[in-house]
Structures are given as structure tokens and as C-alpha cells.
Image 1: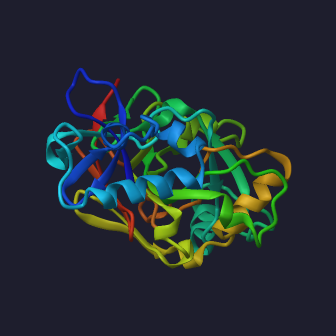
Image 2: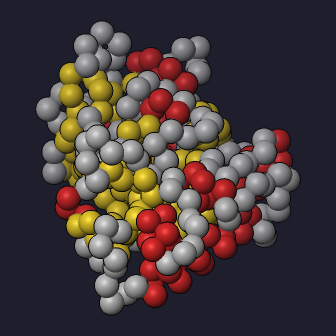
Length: 304
């Protein structure tokens, strides 16, 4: 399933929906029409575990010939928010997780040229998250080096503590697209959170694709353009630490909970690694795609 958080009007509350063709189907309202109770928000839905996905899938299938009035809207007529508009915890970011990105970072960002022996983990606060089409904020008083990174993001579905790599994918709820924006000149004593944690620096969406639709997350092409010019293109097969390794590794010391987000790293092609270096500025447009999931398109706007 493709699951969204949406608003049907500007004034309405954020609600959980499923994409069916060119429609957004409100799962809680559809359930009520059939006498079934389903959560109205994404985090509540994830909390219910795999059985919620099965129940929702069966419910949507039951009404495949026509949804009751007031339970579905044309996708073009609703506003999509980030699938998880306000994560409960910081996003787990993974640095230096593609071989060629390690090399370009070593040249331009003073990181080690050696391949990491363990995942490099940082975090992005919940306030970094914005939804499809929302502006990415550029504050020239803070940064002159705003950079892009396309990433596959993994959404945890079941509490994971000390899990094995062999079982790790069973704890995954689904996947989405995330753009890890970075103010390269805002690193402080080697620490990344201010560089990567500013408001709007984690565009996410346009939906979550549930894990049953993506049995192998290591086969997905991903790419990013700026103003129509391709800057990044790779495949998740080239991750140094695969999704199952990341889930297993983090869970050894930090309990992963339903709704937690792991941004799995970016391939080569970031602005800092180019010769000469390139940055984005107000008026630019960033478009990021992960195969089998979807596309994000975001304007960069002046926030100074």
C-alpha cells in the first residue's frame, strides 16, 4: 500500500489515507462505513502493527468497485503532508554510506578517506520535516553552502531492541523518500546536527510504501536533479551498510520504536563534492526520486 497523510481542505485536520489509483481513500472513514475501527493518523496506524496493513488492504479491496460517498477524494484535490508530519524522535541519519560519497567527502569535507567500519550515525530533529512541495528555507545569514542529498528512508514498524541482521527487515513498516539538506558551512567542531538539523532540512514523502511492496530495498535506483540538471544517480545496492545492517546495528544500543525513521545515506554527486563546488539558492528547485516509491519536488526560498 501507499499511505499518505493528507488534508482535504486548508482548515481540516491531518488524516491517514491510502492511494488507490488517482484517489486518496480515508481509511478511518472507510472503516467506519463498514463497521471497522481503523486509526485516523499515520503514527497510530503504524502502532497497530502488520495486522493494520492487512486489515486496510482487505477493506480497500472490498470497495474496489466504488467507495462510499465522503470516504475518497481525487489526489489532485488534496494536500499531501509529510507521511509522518511530526516524528516522535529525531531522525536517524547515516553518513558516508556509499563508497563514492566517502571519497568525495574526504576531498571536500575533511572526513576520513577510509571506508567506515561501522555505520556513521547523526540525527535530524523532528522540526526538519516538511511535506511534498513545501519550501526548503535558505537563510543567507546562516549558510552560503546549502547542499542536497537524496536518500531512501526506512520506517520502523515494530519495537526493535538487539535484533539480528537476519531478522531486521521484519521490523520495517515501509519506505519513503527523504532529502537530507545540509548547510556545509554550519558544522561545529566536526558535529553535524546544526548543519543538518535546521528547519525544513528533511523534506519527506510523498507517501510511505509498505514493506510488503518492497521485499528487497537494496535494488532501488535513486536520483536527484537541481533545476532539471541531474546531480545524483545511483542504486541502493551500493550502500556500504544495507538496511538490515542499519536496523540491527542501531538496535543494539538504541531501542527503535514504531514510527522511527532511518535516512540510509546518499550516493555521490552532492554539491560539496563537485569541482567547482555547487550550492542551491533561493529560486532553485530540487527534485528527488527513489524507484518504486515516488518523487519529491521542492523550491528553495529565501528565509533570511
